[in-house]
Length: 237
Image 1: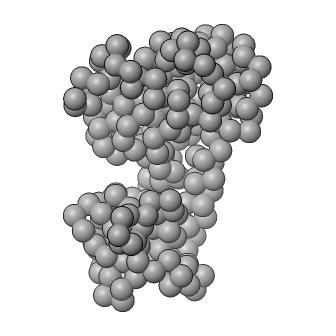
Image 2 (image 1 turned 180 degrees about the vertical axis):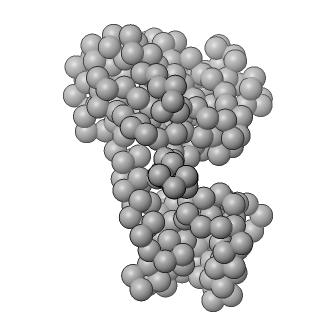
């Protein structure tokens, strides 16, 4: 079943995935999970679509089900600074009542994505009205997003090789591939260039140099990290 059909079929069991994979919902039973899922319908966004912008703010929480989302802000000189990559199972969006804010950030689909959407009224009723969930919100909500945002923001102040090495190390964590083939990052050179705040041409050149040294392997839309220790050394240069 393709991404569009999956999102538009409310009777599919996997619509509960949005809730089941989020830490703050771990104590819910099947009936409670179903009620939560019904309150957070799935929506699809095509690659390149803006899911959230500071120019059209809305108090909405999104739970990413499928695909990846880039969080970025625009600097005073017009540069787009990517601050985070949102992976499936992560909550993002603007909801002041639970301490989740986007500030001046944009959210853009890096590929076709499916998100579950919760309104302010649903959050107040279903999240804040349940003590089990409310107790976890301050600790869990946005934690993964905040950690990654800080690490990628710090990388902007380094040289291009340092920024690329730092970004590859950050995004490859927890993505080991079978048969010991390293940890993979599913990004094009253009997407990686945006993350590292540099040009595609410079990114391709530096990646080629890293590949020649055996630190990474390059594939179509994929980069495998072969030697984390030596990449970490580059980050500290």
